[in-house]
Image 1 (tube, rainbow, N blue to C red):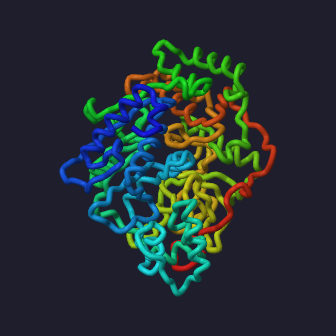
Image 2 (cartoon, rainbow, N blue to C red):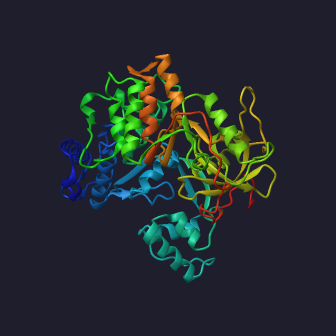
Image 3 (cartoon, helix red, strand yellow):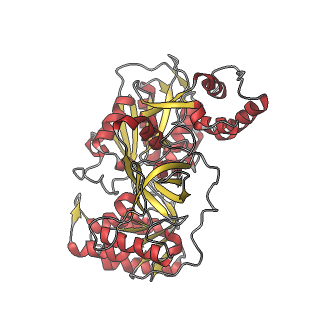
Length: 508
């Protein structure tokens, strides 16, 4: 067992040992730090399940480090080295950019499921640089690049381990070295999937085709995927393949947000009792705020979490009104949520380009201003590895009591967006923000309706997901009021290096 196992709780240690046994059967020895070539017919799938604070991420990170120390190569979404018969690989995935970025901020090289399902096709000349950086080839001589440019690429890769980032440091654009994208047609090896509660059956089937050894990490108290049967992907596994973790008190001690999340497991707890707990926690600890209004300045970077669509639409329009946003245009700094990509089949390559850069359904985006072509927008995709791009956009702003959304501007085709100042709790799954505002009147409405999901009151599941989105501070908003902004919308806090990407050849 690796050194990190010394900090394990008993159930984490048991889960680690069970996973190590499965990996050893697949040819990866964590104890001895060695690998053997992959064997056919040894497929396995397991799930590590546990509520917030149970140590799933700590276990995932420790297993990643142990696999890397054993000589397993990490496959990222931006480049994959040439195949070797004896090569063992690991890919760490999450359903959304935001969920992947949460892992990356903790030192785990995660990417999205989509970036693994579709792989980039590199220009052969520049692929020589990628192979050299990845340690699979000699330093190349590239006519279009100086030795100094190659040195910059090498220095960047030593600290960031990103092939596109290193090539950008050498002065290249993505359109120079990535010629297209293709659906993966060959399986990989070992896959870790975080936030597995968000997986639907189709995604799980896709992952099982790609990874002979698959390990899911999920929270059974989250909300099930919208449109499904109310169950989660890992629930269909046999009990022998599910490893359950419990709360690790020494690691999340003195965390009032997790205290509140775990209190929801009490079947006797009613909504009013829970609100009294929040009010008392707010008196003791500033990490819990009993808020009499929505703070509009927080909405630009972390949406208010609501249950009802009507509440979401009202809050969005209040946010725009208080900032003086015109009805026919967006202000720089307005938040958006990607609602999909509308492109005909002949533009499939451009769809893959946009999706690979982070514009997948549910992605959180900040509007940076209009592009150079009509209907194009400059965007910052929150949590993406290379976040800034320009794309044809269709922006829809829903209005209260109106069936059709208002469209301030639109391209004929491209990425579609809804406003992101408020989102439903379902769409917030997989994301985390430093400050999270939860609109309590909506949860009270769910409690009064008496609805249940998977045998638990719906309001409790909603409350659990909503409050565990908060990394540092929870704002429990109890009144339908909005503050005035203390400053105008801003974009200067975002990384400013633009990476153009359009639906036409060349730059926007």
